[in-house]
Length: 105
Image (tube, rainbow, N blue to C red; front, side, top):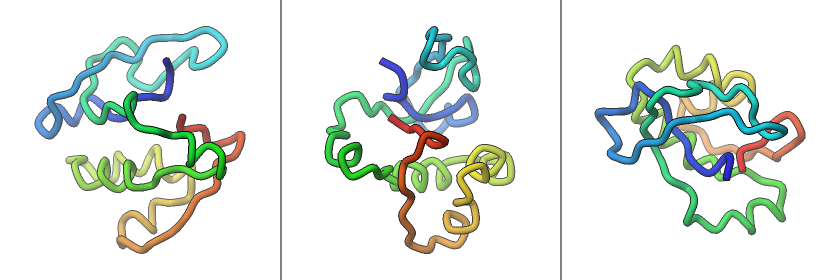
C-alpha cells in the first residue's frame, strides 16, 4: 500500500526499518528514491483514520525525520513545498491541513 512508509536513503544510520519505493500505476508512478533502499518509519500499523477524517497530517513524523536527517538543507528541498520548513527548523508548533497538493497517507 502506498504512503505507509516514510524515510530516505540518508537515514540508514538512524533507522533499522528499510523499504524500497517502487512505481505504482495511478498512485505514485515516479516516487522519490524509486528503486533505492530507504530507511525510516513504518506507518503501516498506525491508525491514520482520525487524521484522515479530520483532513490533517501527523506532523510529528516530519519533525522526527528532520531531527534524524543528516543534511538539513537537503531535507528542506522536499518540505519547503509544504511551506513548513521554517516551522520545523525553529521547532514551533503548527498544523497543516491535508489538501490535494499534500497527500501523506
